[in-house]
Image (tube, rainbow, N blue to C red; front, top):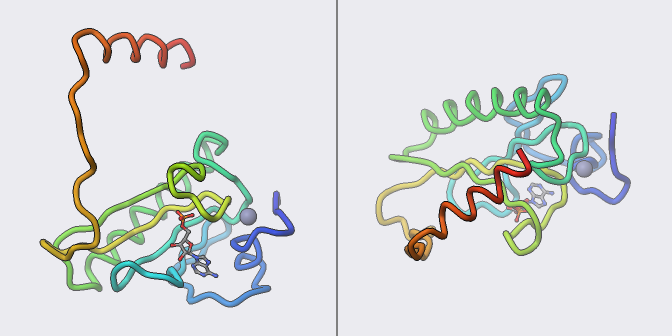
Length: 139
Ligand code: AMP
Ligand code: ZN
């Protein structure tokens, strides 16, 4: 399996450092975030070292996705909450501090103050279409 020596999540997978596990199969591990932003904040990771979502093999992502659904279902039933965020930060500018792809499952309640909506703006006329054309060149 693809691992990286200095990766803290690879070390968790290898049980070289402790974690509070909630789900494990041959491909995926889910464990409690050590610095939760709400009670029940859980991380779902592939056991294999993958840095970012765009570097993840689709077949592996499918298995991670199944585990995200399973764990989100359990977390939302177990933790008193009226919603949850699923977040995957990619790259330092997007807030990724651990370079091993992971999905945060963060229980939420109305007015919990965890974080608010992002600062949305409007595209000027034609810009969305232009950007979409650029993106489509890489699909
Ligand atoms: P991100 O900023 O998206 O890379 O998130 C990394 C997350 O990993 C943070 O929420 C950390 O609290 C969490 N984290 C870092 N080290 C550990 C650890 N040893 N066990 C559990 N969670 C961790
Ligand atoms: Zn890793």
